[in-house]
Every structure is written in C-alpha cells, then in structure tokens.
Image 1 (tube, rainbow, N blue to C red):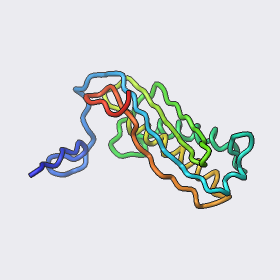
Image 2 (tube, one colour; image 1 turned 90 degrees about the vertical axis):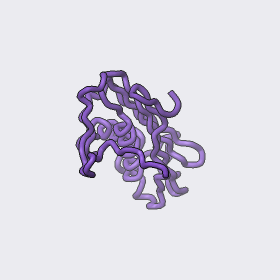
Image 3 (cartoon, rainbow, N blue to C red; image 1 turned 60 degrees about the vertical axis):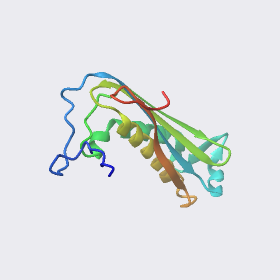
Image 4 (cartoon, rainbow, N blue to C red; image 1 turned 30 degrees about the vertical axis):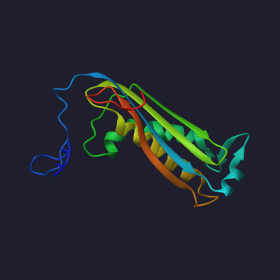
Length: 161
C-alpha cells in the first residue's frame, strides 16, 4: 500500500502548524509562477496601441503593481507562510494574439524557506487585477491556470532553472 506523503503544515496529531525553519541554512532561493487569463472578444475594445486601457487606467501596469504588492504581503494572506524579506520581484505580462494574457511572477530571496507561495500569489493577484479592470466590458474573462513554473535554492529544485 502506498503511504501518503507527509504534509509539512500538519503536526503528528493532525493539527495545523507553521514549519520550523530555524535549523535550515540560508540560501539563495527563487520561484517563478505563471497565470493565464483568457479575454473575450469584447475586450478588444480596450486595446490601444497594443496595450489595454480600462476606465480604471492602464491594465497591465496596474496588474504589475498589484502582483508585486501581493507577493510582498503573502504571509498576511496565506496561513503559516513565513514573512520574507523579498529581494526582488518582477511581474511580466504579455498579451498574445488569441487574447491570452500570460502573467509571469519571479521572486527571489536569501532565506531559510522558499518563495513559491510569493510567486504564486503575485501571479494570481495580477490575474485578478486584469479581471477587475476589464470586467466592465464582459464577465466572460477566464483565469485558466495559475501554476508554479520553477523553484530553486531549497532542498529540492523544481522545473526549469
């Protein structure tokens, strides 16, 4: 019988807990996450010179700021995330011809724990901001996926480096 993997945020008696990182080594850590947003045809009315503008302002520029702010505040939003002194956070947004918006958030830090949740939170909130700023033209906007692309610097790396 296959044994369930150990969940790090659950104690032996089943109680939720924060992971103790006190004995871990400080290393350079980086994570990259991506969210994809599909815009309906109606959103093309917001396009001007290859950029999206809504009544609330420039969509992508606002989403970049929101994603960065969210990454920095992840520990306030997700239980048991350690507050981290983020050293760098970039949010890049590309609009593809099929009205697919690709949002990539890259976060790095020198610390005892990784920044996957910060990158995922940054990408997610940037996607939600795109939705919020474009919903006046249609509610048929779909946030299709948010996923971890890669992480490095901890005991195990994941994805492309």
